[in-house]
Structures are given as structure tokens and as C-alpha cells.
Length: 289
Image (cartoon, rainbow, N blue to C red; front, top):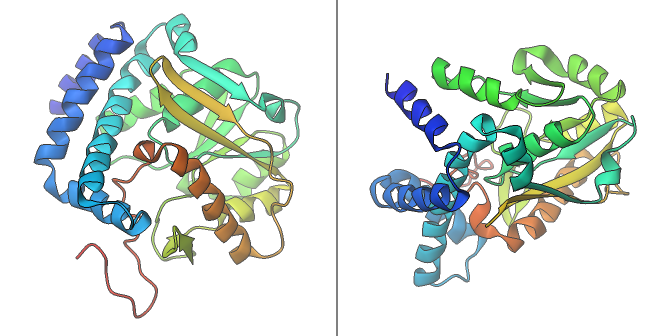
């Protein structure tokens, strides 16, 4: 019942002016910062590890901004998934090397976990005439799961692969010319992960970007989505000319190095609420206690 009430209000918020939605998100972000102490601690540990030069005051301010951006982006899904198509298009600005996504060549879109990741997916599927795919993890809450699936399949011709679909199905789709919107920059557990530096700290990282690029004979095109006062800017960057190589470890480390440059531009919009350093190399102590 609680989930249905929340989703009802998300639909109610959809036609509101963006300034109103963002103001509500600001209030929600401050509330979450104040009351969700365990997750606040995760954010602070992540930021302290990645930005050790921050003062205590700077760390506190950045942590608050992380919660505000997280909350604002969450409420933005109301208009992303329930607003009129004209409203959605007006608030999503697709920029940069958009030509990289044209044609029919195999493409993997490297989409880092910024809070606007659903805005980026929506912009691509609404504004570009290609059949996009991505990988989806089922949510434990089935009502929320159905809502997210409908929202992500709202525009264009798209397919959400489940974990059970397997690598072969995804690679076959890639080779047929369906771009894969891939988000590999999380800690999904030590199984098949490699420990490579992320801001100088060893982080369990899945090498799926390099692996899928090699198997699918695909180029890698980064797409970075940033929240703005007008909505979101979805910036398509040039394809990486030196990627992938035959060295899975080096490729995965390079992915993290380039990701850091994207994060440095808007650190408060990265998904720091995730336990990025949960798994540690053998012999290293846990960082979250």
C-alpha cells in the first residue's frame, strides 16, 4: 500500500513546474540526510576515501549535496515516466558527439551511475531512432519493479535484458546493431570482478565493458548525464579509440580512470550511496565496519 501511495504522488508531481519538483527534492534530500544515518555514513566513507583532501566542513557539505541530488533525481522520474512526451523532450538536452550513435554499427554505451541515469536512457530512447538495450535487475518490491519497467520502456523500441538472459543473447543483440546501455561501475560482488584502482583505492569492478566490447566487436561510446536547472544534459562523448584491448585488467582500470574525470566535474551527482568498496582484496580490512 505504501508503495502505491508513493507512486500515486509521483504521477501527481509529473505536470508541476520543474522548480517546484526540485524544491521538493531539496527538502526530501535534507530529510534523508538527517534521518538515514547508516546511508549517510556510507556516503561519507566513500567521499573520504576518494577525496581525502576534503576538510570536515567540505565533506559535510558535499554529503548533503549528494542526498539532495539523489532525491531530486528520484522525484524527476515522475515527469520522466508520466509527463507528456513534449514536456520530457523539452527537459532533456542531447548534446555532444551524437553522430557516434548513428548508423547500425555495434555500440556499447558506457553510462556511469550518475543520478540522472534514467534521464539519459529516456533521452536516447525517445530522441534517437535505434533499438536500445540494457540490463535490468529485478526489484524485490514487485509494485515498484513493474513501475520501473514501464518507465524504462516508455519510449522507442527497447529491450531490457534480465540476468537470466545470459551473455550470448546480449552479444547476439549487439552484433545485430542494437546499442547496449551498460552501467558497469558498481560493486556487484567479488564473483568475476577484478580489483582495480578507483581514486587510488582498490575496488571490485566487473570487467563487462571490455568483455562485451570484444565479444560484440563494438565500439565504446561514453554518455554522461548531468542534472541542470532546465532538466538534464545528456552528453555523448567520442568513442574510445584505444578500447578494448586484449588486457582485461588494463581495460577495466582505464575505465575507472576515465570515469574519475567525469565524476570530478559534478561529484555531488555520482551515486555515492552505493557501497562501492564493500568487497576488499584478500587481507584488507572492511571499510564500512
